[in-house]
Length: 627
Image (tube, rainbow, N blue to C red; front, side, top):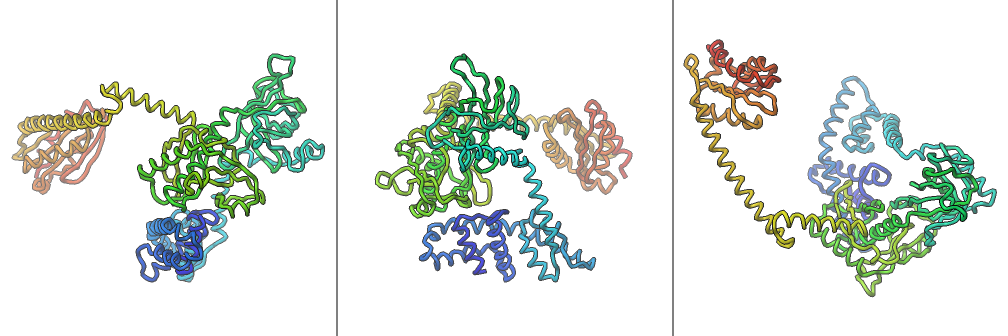
């Protein structure tokens, strides 16, 4: 347990979270094995966080990041241990049943599909199932387990992008030809995204339609265009691709000869960039001159949001703690989505503080600086790298803020290959729109900035103005006006409830007066006004209690369907009366059926027009069946 706890502590301290893939799976396996070892020696409650605390106390003076992440490490361990405990007992019961069945049949091997089911449904790592199997003198069909796991992964991969399923040989052939001809260098297509170039005059050097190289693409074709250089950003690091146009516009003409609307960018193999789009005008031909231009308005929205992700990351670490690390992101023109390591939902106060700090960073108008350096030097200087990301020897560092003019806890320095604004003030407004959980120990925040944020603010001001008009109040008085309206509504609801109760009592008394005597037994069969079955059951109970001894059958039209509910007092059950039999026979008249207990039952039907006829049959039924 101590060895496992040490490994768990350092893994989480390094940013690994429990999961089902890669290093995350290793952590989950180690943690759950340790939890089960504890259970075997009588530790029923989560305990590993306390062991981790000892690890931090003993190792923290050598590994100084551990004490800073103490709370996060302990919360993550406890959350995973509790999650495992919730499924452990159910999974163990299933495994015990499986092993008992195998022994009864004289078999000694747990089938791979069953081991996979335990992993997939109850989170049992294969090692844990193996340990339990060995304790019971059984083995596991591990090849079968791996086959089931591979089949699941293959099914998941089947929904990946079409490009992943395509044969890349056509791209490799094209890139090889371009290099041989000297059209592109050894590094392949030149990417101009860091050179502040929005458009470039160039030449079409490759056309692909339906997976085949072609010499021309016609109007309506979906085409992949290769240029020797491009200003278009290719989706990477969470930032979406640029869109825009590629067209040929000779100087002596008033309109383009052909136009391609670029909707997506791809890098099918290293060194080759393709512009995916649709020919909307004319026919594009190989070796045609072309002008390639990005949608600059969209690019600016994306740049605002990408720099804003760095601002948000800095604010989160400042407010929540240095255990916060990026766990994924989406940078699109209309919003940004940021996933980060944190075990607890954010309170309203925390969200407000994060948003306020982020806007302070924006308003500080820090210059956004970019530079290239070695990976080692960048990390040594404190640059944050995305955990699990593969970096080359040379990396790009994006930073803003200085210790001298701001708090060092909000200085941002990250390894990033995306596009950014020149200064934080260019982000404009920064507004959090939502927060939630995406996985164990991972939270998600969504944010809008710039033009979208301004539109959101305008929309909310318009909503406030509309509400103010409706409530005849000034916007700053809306909270009080709504509070008063809620109180008035509660008062009216209480008064209405009292009126309904009085009306129900009056109606109930009137119905009670219609109780008939059938051979000395009180029988009340009545058509009532009710909105649902619960109300009818309450009414039935009330009438039964009032009668003391008797039979109550109520019918109502519920959403254009007839419903019958019957109750029989205990003394009459002994005399042959059965609520389930009463409604079963009465329901035949309304084209339905039902039943229930001797003292309470209900039935439904299709013909609401025969509900009164069904109720009239009750007296005769009692007369016939009474003993």
